[in-house]
Image 1 (cartoon, rainbow, N blue to C red):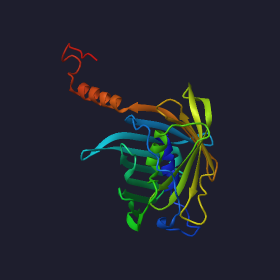
Image 2: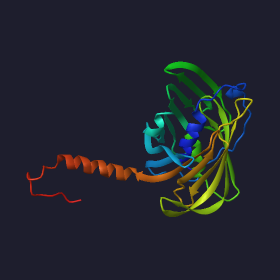
Image 3: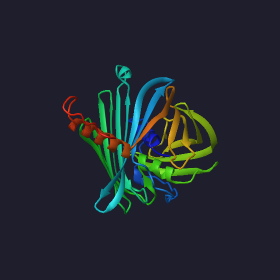
Image 4: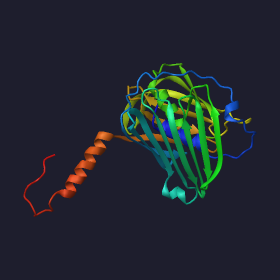
Length: 295
């Protein structure tokens, strides 16, 4: 599972909540999950675009940009997820969210994660660094001022919200299978699980697609109350090798949020479009030349 799932997990797991429960430091969490070995990491570069609705009413959009990146001689993936409310909704409630993850191209283990969110006038950000030896460091800011810093060691296979979605996407899916991940968002640790319920046919943008129906669940591990925002959710993941997140429906504290894939623009298409735009800018104006470019 990729793209939208990472974006939604980022928004849900990184959103501020009222401190109603006792906080449990991340290093005191007792959790053990499988150290999954990716079966495929052939993720195509490009941008995924989604429309987001609440109770069937369009309220925003999301996009996820997937790129290859080299750090020294080592290959990584750099994934940037963004979500925002529509202008008509901004009058009542304005949300802007960005999450970025850089993770190893072979193991999909995260190296760093950054999230920024502005909810009306309230602005928060977090940055996490993951060391190969299991040391995790994070710094949080609130309206530009440092609010806290956390450092701890994890002996478990700990991921950020985006890298967790990509690890899930890299694994084979079978009916009845359940995958569980230890996810850290910079403040809290969560046990995020995905249950594959089966195959079904859905329509996305007027096209018939075969998809796995997947039910995610989120358990907060770092407070005594647990996760309360995500009531229930269903994700439809394409059954083809691309494993695209086609559609998502989620019940939250108030109502139901749904999101649907609008389009995917491969990186090679973007590069070609940029090249054509630059070429067009360099061409003579009409009447200056009788020659026409061949495309």
